[in-house]
Amino acid sequence: MHVAVAGTFGPIHDGHRRLFEHALRFGTDGVVVGLTTDALASETRSEPRPIPPFEERKQLVEDALADLDEWDRHVEIRPLEDEHGIASTDPAIDGLVVSPETAIELEIINERRRDRGFDPLTGIVAPYVLADDGERISSTRMVAGEIDAHGRLLE
Image (cartoon, rainbow, N blue to C red; front, top):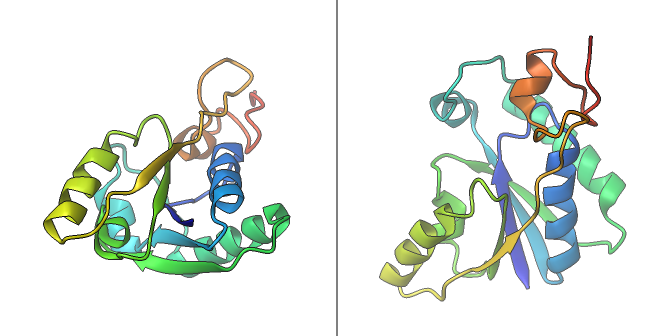
């Protein structure tokens, strides 16, 4: 299965690592990481926050994937310029790793794929990783100084 996962991934935390692990585990034919461009990353934020530049985030993703890849998967990181771009336009992708929050997007992506004559994607839902306070880990919470990358509460 050729699997995609997408996001801003900055800063990286254990929730992102879980998404990457799922992509690597199921991506027997390779993994495509759609990494939001700087423009898309700032456009899609409901709450503005500092986001590291694309090249910095790309390096962090490469490092995280290298640490997690026990299967020696072929991984390609592509700039993601629109929300559904790679998953809806690449006929070679078979599955999409999503979080519970983004699972609803799969329906939209598959509708666009059907319109193009492509097969629908298999959704692979990676459960949230929770912080010590029981809330999900997020980059926004990290940047705000609430938690660290592993969900430990900061004073």
